[in-house]
Figure: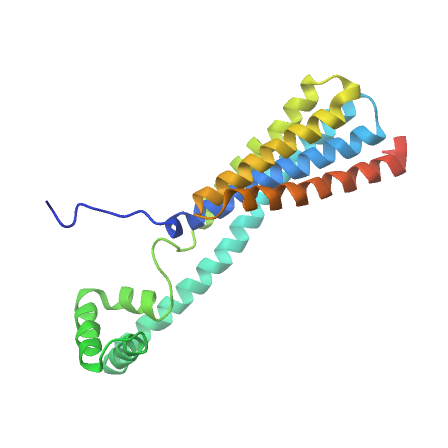
Amino acid sequence: MNRHSHLERHFTQRIGWLRAAVLGANDGIVSTAALVIGVAAAESARGPVLLAGIAGLVAGAMSMAAGEYVSVSSQSDTEMADIARERRELAESPEAELRELEGIYVQRGLEPELARRVAEQLTKHDVLAAHARDELGITEAQAARPVQAALASAATFSVGAALPLGVAALSPARLIIPTVSVSSLVCLAALGALAAHAGGAGRIRGAARVTFWSALAMAATWIVGRIFGTTV
């Protein structure tokens, strides 16, 4: 058996896309459902409710994409700046950087002699990768990917927002609020459980926290809609 053929998959390898995807889908359902419920509480006609929901979907998807791209780009810029500085330090003082790497391994529990040998071996293999991983904490699995994060957020937001919109379009006008509320909370609970499971956490806890805050958001917009009545 080839000792290199077995590749383990870890939860941390999912962090980049999982965070953006879950955030996008969750925000798509919550914001659109809350918007639909708020407008429906103030306006009984289906047209304005659907129009508000569609506008919320388009604006939300673009906002999520732009926000994720800018945010993750800033993280990527910071990582690249740190790596560039590390590259300069390796070129100017390689022995000092070797001792620094050795010191990191000693702090992690290796004997000084073994730490020295490990540092030397990793330096020969890929010195920049060794320092990026062990000194800066930057790994390939967790590296910032702005475009991936932006596309994942926009796509999942759109999918999430389509759920309450579809329910609102198919429900009788007088039942839009209860049907959108219940269906959205069920979907959000399932999403929270799925995201928690994919990340290696407890599904019940993940579902409960998403459901609680989402219900709070929907209740708040319903109250606003009732207060302002048909002035929307």
